Image 1 (spheres, rainbow, N blue to C red):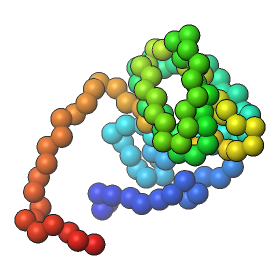
Image 2: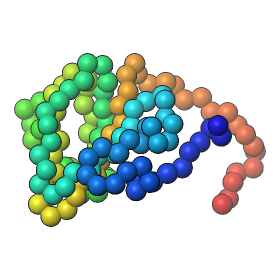
Image 3: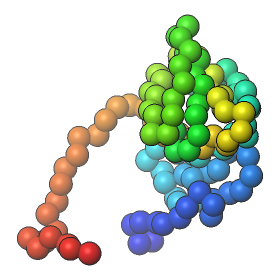
Image 4: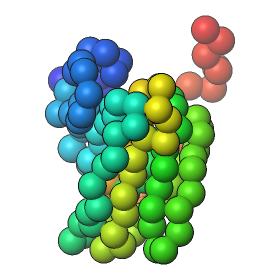
Length: 124
């Protein structure tokens, strides 16, 4: 294995529903999927026993119901939800697909340690 993998949302699946990004790229340190909802799709209320989730709106508009609050997120919008907090994510648009990237994990942040490879900065 090379230590890295390239792909695209189109390469990891097609149509509506889950696109298994983690599996396609060989990610083992955390969960990550893309979700594509058709216009007007209403998601399902759910939670997890252990895994927090971070939602990123790549394209479209998401309608989020969490903690008694309803909010709409546009492209670039972010939402973090702790594992046991029920949430419902739907497509807020009647005409555009919603494309989300969802990252899940547990047990906290791992402090970043940087190793210097070269004193010359890449310019390409």
